[in-house]
Image (cartoon, rainbow, N blue to C red; front, side, top):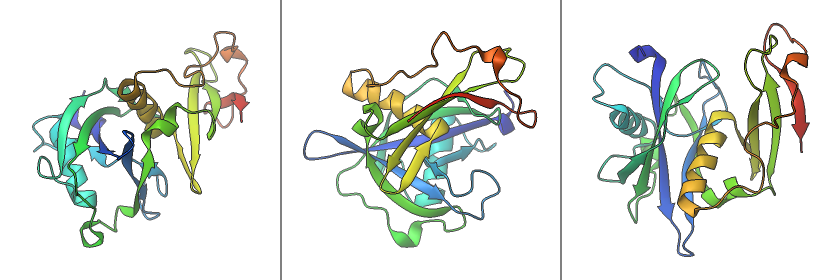
Length: 206
């Protein structure tokens, strides 16, 4: 894929004293041209100077929140590429935050990031704060896509970010979520109502 069609995100995991893990997330600035105000992982589009996906994730994390690799976070693995709704291939790069690291306010890029916070990774396996929508293309050419939402301290973590964190949590904790990750086989995607030529919700669950 062309460089403009590729992106990478860093999934920074910090160990807690109770053997759990927290993930560092950002709220995107409302002035951003895309995904304004949404919850995201540090990351962005591939740059010509980036040697690899891990390099993209590391550069973006440094520029957005001042998190440096390998000084502040050690890259430990990569997940398979996932496709965003804007047809950008996104590579999740998983890293472990070194003990004692704290994001410094003066290093946050306020043009891109409104807030930095942490959330418990295990939450993304729990049904307690979870809901979903099943979306389908109007022509029914593809299976329905389940879009996940998690509510956390007044924030909604959803879409590609939520899907990545579900997969990371599955691998870290070695167990399946308390909810179905994919849409049911019985969903009749060809019956989806077309809404302004875009995908439409055909099934929801709270």
